[in-house]
Length: 147
Image (cartoon, rainbow, N blue to C red; front, side):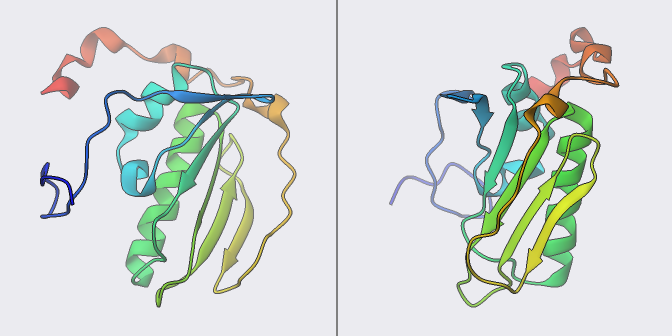
């Protein structure tokens, strides 16, 4: 176990940076588990202009409220960063889930309480910033986020 770094007494190890992974399709951001709940994580990943964010969830959802909040936040990350966001969890006595949102926030895959792999075609061209939310940011006003 690692020393507790905060966060509800959970044992975890902090990373040293937030970034993306190079793939043959382009940069891919991988927010791990509940990092999807922090808009700063997705935003920093999106500074690398990824074609996709993949949210790997460590367990299934424990209850419907958690499921609703998690997927609402994933949809928000897709909209605010204009990037496809996909995620999945496994079943460990909880609610298994697989989802995908396109850059407009439209749900293109939703699998709940089902098992196995699910085909999904993602148009990476849609990850081109159409509306321009990302360009409208004013980072000079975000200094308080580092507190």
